[in-house]
Image (cartoon, rainbow, N blue to C red; front, top):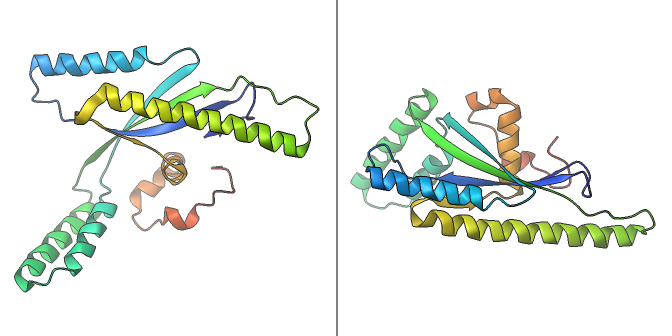
Length: 197
């Protein structure tokens, strides 16, 4: 995501969905080891990089339950199919009654944009300059994705957000009432040619 102009004074950010392990029953050594990973993450944020963590709770398992339902439709054995349909129905109703809980941890890393396009570039020159700048930012965030995965290892899934995930997250963040609705189709609303606003 680009905030402001894509040149000096602007900034770029990328979101990462982190799925850390449940450490509530972890040993002291395991907890200290995970704290060392967080320290290593903060130490890797170099000059001009900032991190923001957002931990939220909701009950939205719609994607997972829909995938489970689609797999259930393929089951041929009638008893297995009936059991899976009952389980789907039970959890779907629990989700709508807000009885399920899902914790989400999203980390946004932002960096300042230092380049300046200049005043004498043609439209084609500006397109080439901005394309090069966006390529550099993409490479920087891809490298950061690898760094995060190596720091946290196999016990924490690190999923970089794409444009649709950024749009969905920002839409929910800026419209808290959407948390009450499970019928919003963000795929249909997303238009990559428009800004998030």
